[in-house]
Every structure is written in structure tokens, then in C-alpha cells.
Length: 76
Image (cartoon, rainbow, N blue to C red):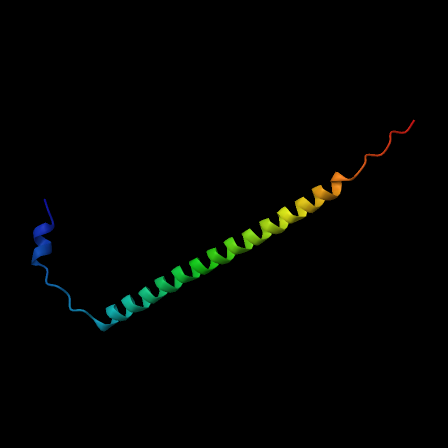
């Protein structure tokens, strides 16, 4: 039992202005959503790179300052 012949007998619906308006607005929404995702990801990767560079610099400063340290002498 197939519904394929029934699909052939159906007449096409006329293209309504509301359908076109929905398609246009939905397309604009999708484009805006994708642009927002790209902006957020770009911002987050940039901030992560800056944060990692600052963290690396702090680690290097901490290790270079510790190189000249002399451990305290043991108490008798």
C-alpha cells in the first residue's frame, strides 16, 4: 500500500505571501545567528590566547625570580 499515487494527484498549493515572508525572515534569522556564533567564537579564542600568554608570562616571571633564591639554612 503506497501513498505515492496520492501525492501525484495532489494539486500544488499557490505560493502565498506569508510563506515568502516567513522564508525571508527565517533566512535572515539564520544568517544573524551564524554571524553571532562566529563573533562569539572569534572573541573567545582571542581572549583565550591573550589569557594564556599572560599566564605564561607570569609563570616565566615566577620561575626566573625563584632561580636566584637560596633555600634557608637548616636550624641546628
